[in-house]
Image (cartoon, rainbow, N blue to C red; front, side, top):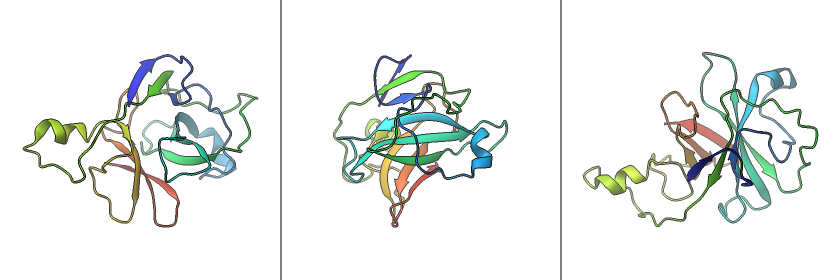
Length: 171
């Protein structure tokens, strides 16, 4: 995963407005002024576990001192386009494009003594080996504090649980 300052047409991006609207949000309507759009990852051709899904969108609390763990939403392909531009955007979500480079990863976690291979697994990426080895979860992606993001000094990992619900964990 690579980050380029400003928006240059990538569907995967940080900041700006989301492309499609979320049908259902993991917070109440009263909390709409707390959760700001952070980023979206276009999943078409990237994550086979998410058929008929256009994007993963992350939203994070805009309140100072709040838990930095964002909430993830799966956005179906048939969702309504965001034409009114009325979504709260997180103030730290400056505009960046996200691009992807396919890399071969090991099937098992290398030992820390294999330093370059080990460190590479902890970079921002979509798919591949889950370096945190979360049991009963399907690993989808992880995002570090690249591009001005703030996860409290941690990596934000995105998973599907055994019920097919998307979750985020800070590791």
